[in-house]
Length: 466
Ligand SMILES: [Zn+2]
Image (cartoon, rainbow, N blue to C red; front, side, top):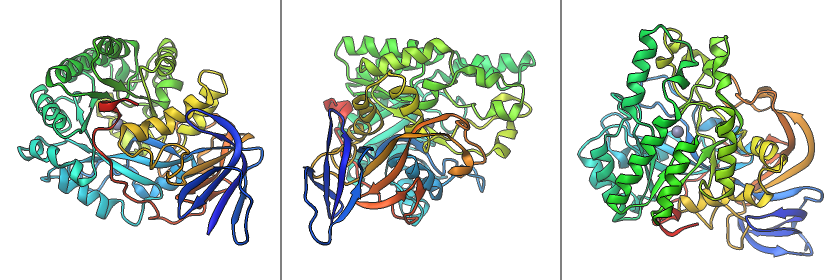
């Protein structure tokens, strides 16, 4: 059967035009003008935008698999993600207890995500246990459809922390096989000292989360990662950049022709650290994520860095932690589990706060929320743009809709939404995943488990450019 998405205002990564999209066997096979034949399914998109399904290259579903029975929201909650217009995620695959990188990835694909995920996905390997085997395993990631690995420089004394020696060795081994190394570039030792000082002074409220990890902590971590990557001769991808200190380091590196790229997140572009100053502990704890939220001036710095190409993706860093778990930090902000949900809201919030304000063009929007993440993660052109041969992952977006984000309209698997009450200046109306309508009238009409693992190719954009 053929499907024709008719008369939409099509927005791609570099164009906008009125036209039809022809779909056969789940793939885009034509862009232009098509006369429906007998038996063709026609989806009328007149008066609406049609853009590629979003690719969110930074999510943490089922993130705490190492810590017993409590976990963050799992893949079954990706129904809210696809309702929000994101059709593919690149989820983090932390090592399971006593397991290496590859076994943990295998378990995630065949047990955790299987039968549950509503979005297509690929994975980043993620070090949470520095076992001898991981250095060899890095070389086998591409054979297993994985093209990236995450190293955390922050979180001193936690299993997440990757020391400089390990980071360097991972960089070296990644270079040989085209794996992209993502870093969380905060200096864990500085944070540890500042946290101790805060607690000692009786400063235990959530707002001290930001006090204990100021921007220069991120600037230093980013600079060190860039230095080590340069010595290893490996490209680097800096996760969740939040401030000018880190942006400056990326600009400097590019100035000497080093391959460094970076992303930022929806919340760093739209929320300030004022949110952490709320007197209500639970309200404030919703915004405890790392790096910390920044002041107003950094918001503008980040939009500028996206527009000038220093940063090249907007991600959610989605982590679904219930408020009940956030209460672990009532005695001290250092014990609040870090992370905020937002994978389902990214496209709506960036449309309202980026496109509608004139900060970014519609083409830039598509690049940042879909095309670049697909290229960075080795799944382009199957994902990320409207091009012949791509999977027919499409969003039909009603630009005239006016309303507000309400958790109750689209529960995200967590007991709150950090964007509650934010304006919807347009809304995702219909979503196609590989040619199938899975969201209709902003409601999920697909199947749990419809999402597929998409093998990623090595030597992606960090190596070869966008
Ligand atoms: Zn993250």
